[in-house]
Length: 585
Image: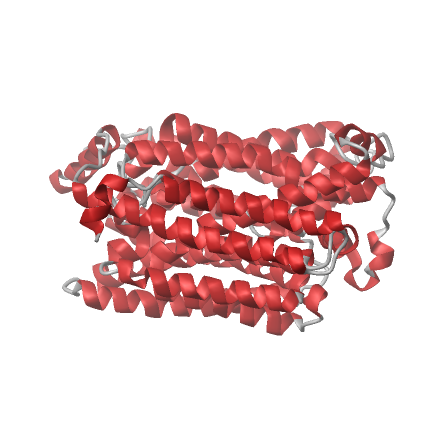
């Protein structure tokens, strides 16, 4: 039954790609929906890019072991999206580019265009590989499939959808996947709260040791380490969500106002999310469920199965299939956004600029599909490699990738918004300094070195993992960021051509974008109608699971979950502007 549910969901996603193929005629359509999308679609994809199966595995395991601490990461994301709403999101859309690297070229010149092209793609491939591996852990455990086969099949489904429909399929599926995920997780959290005797009881039952608390977690000898980690996680997430490299989330919005609304939607969802996502893990910990004895073959990764265990033992039959579909949804949304973004960067900022300056739009769209295919295969290979590292913690891996690889790249992409008078070489040189800093922290800095400085109180494994991330972030803020700022001392007037590009960059940032015209209104209607119908069909399917043999409360769970999905679909259909319908026909 669970396999059937997931199989139907896979088919549904592939159909979405096929339906939206007609929306794609140019590279602008393929990579950013032509910059014509409504705020609720853009907000959904902005939210989903920070969300994957890792949330239900590595992050859920962290919640099971250390309580509220993992929620800090997602609250920091919400803070980043709040800053998007207050300032950055409209500015990102006003860049008026197809790919983010085009903005880098305007700000820092042609040489940096190639440096950032070839440095950003590998980073995204590693992150996507971690997400795909996290999904395979759950799917293989539920269905008994081989991990290698699970990684390959899942990767190929994402690939087919992304290649077929481009950004229209990617962002449309993100919105539907967001609805399914929120419906499933709200339902699971509600059941956990009811069975746990209320939120207060779940928190009071959470097991603590060695002076730990629900808020700070366990295995802490130095509370100050946790405090430093929490503060700099906010720095990291703020930087990651507010820089040119990640502005791609809003390039698809139809205007500045829609980009701003999209950021607010992502902020609200990310603020509420952690309290729903991690309630089952907190409940299990309070019930004294020993996951290490239940999943001995998982070793240190046993806690990663907490969400799955809850659904298998506390939710009605059929819910596992729906949950795994939601996990596929979360991971696919992150992967397909990354695929689409990286393909755009390669085609628009290398192939067209270096290899084929006179290429036609038809040729570029074709090459885009080939590139998406190649990058999809690369992600599958990365996930297979990560799977071979059996003792690797998914939570810590994601933290290290973000702090030591992702964060330093955002520094020039963030500071370049506000500091005008820097030499062009400041962009690539800052990346080089960042790489050196990351190497020193990631490879040369050892637990023994830090323990010697701190004194006799031993560092726990958790403290060392948190401290290493915090030290990396501090080093990049001070040294990598300091280097970029110091480059102002070497600023010299730019050539006329380069100064024209820089002036265009800052003029675009300052000029609001307004979308008007009947053609845009017709497209708005088409988005509402198509997504509304598809989501309603999905909701009916979820409600149809009421027929699965379950206790009455279990059947009602599917009615509740499907009702949420249908309500959103009907809301979209009802928002269609009826006065334009005759024109549409």
